[in-house]
Image (cartoon, rainbow, N blue to C red; front, side, top):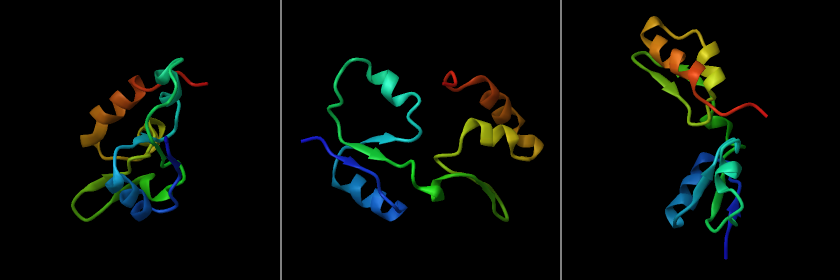
Length: 98
């Protein structure tokens, strides 16, 4: 049986990932079109509700870019010049907006 889970914490998501194979759903703009007309046959782990995976944070010696951070977030964030190539790439990639 196919499972769908929407964890409310990163710890819960990690526990579920430890149980077996999951397709991770984050956003969904590419997830459903990539599926085409085929039925979903894999367990789906929806991480859209995990705010802890969003955003960009600066520590004393590095930056942390969360797994759910959008390309738009990267473009708009005041990152230092060393990140200019990433920001340029962020302007070029991504799905067509719906």
